[in-house]
Image 1 (tube, rainbow, N blue to C red):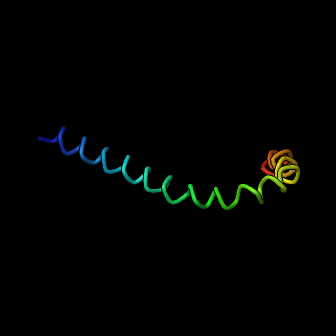
Image 2: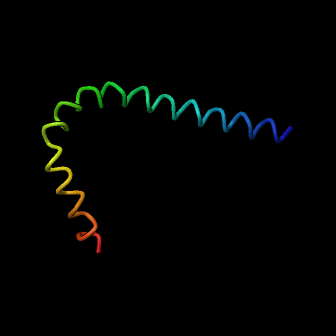
Length: 54
């Protein structure tokens, strides 16, 4: 009985993840042109991020 409950919880988590992806897809679709123009800036910040963390 407990095993079934655990399986149901796992399934619920998977559905939540799917919902997050479902909500993120349009956001990423709208942000894609912006990120395309900001790519050099993003790469620059990604290069600087490890330095700031250290």
